[in-house]
Length: 102
Image 1 (cartoon, rainbow, N blue to C red):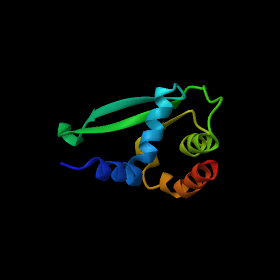
Image 2: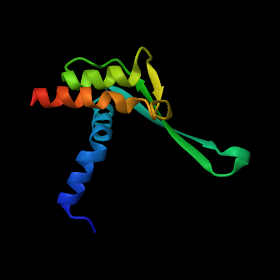
Image 3: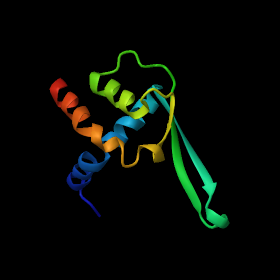
């Protein structure tokens, strides 16, 4: 079993942005919906999440606004699978804004 220090470190390294996205959903800024579809030839199931901008973006911190803007671009809806291999390039900018605020 992992210690709380190890778990905290893992969240900081891998899950910080996931936690921020879930927090934005909890606060009503975005909506998250899980989608499931049957796999090829009905074998297995594929899972994805759809994120939707719901328009409550007032009072966001600068890094949260950047996160939302980079996540959605000009769209009001985005699938998690669309962000794979693309979104990572914005992480340094978002991290910098977050640390500048602190």
